[in-house]
Image 1 (tube, rainbow, N blue to C red):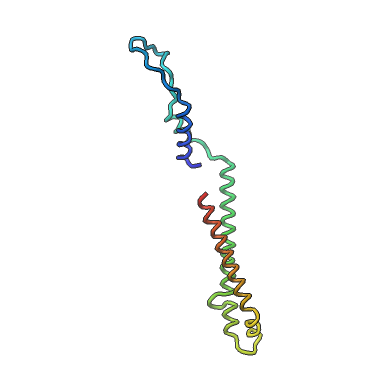
Image 2 (tube, rainbow, N blue to C red; image 1 turned 90 degrees about the vertical axis):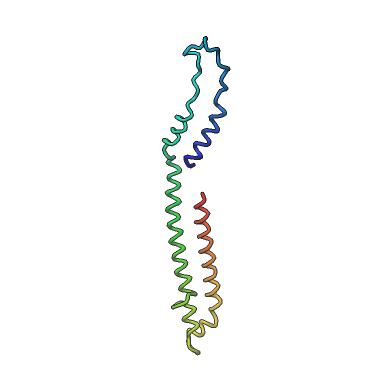
Length: 140
């Protein structure tokens, strides 16, 4: 919860707790002890800023940041492997497509090109899903 939210919630709670002041007594009957002390909202609001973060919350943030780094490294490796399978230069698909007739590469190309393409598409879909998780975690 950010400091603004804390202040806002505190102000909402304080408004419910503040007693309604009785009508002011006549000026000639005022004594110093009879005046009610009202809570000092400004002091209470500034006290909210001095509250330390909850260790459980900071632990969770650290854990999420570590997991974010791991997912980002996975995404990098998936991108590399997708490029290896179905990239432009030096990829498996490029090597198989450029193979001469009656070679082992040509035989692999005939039988496995669709499978390689499908695997590359599935990896690209997984990459996008992982990126979506990273983006959705930014909002929290």
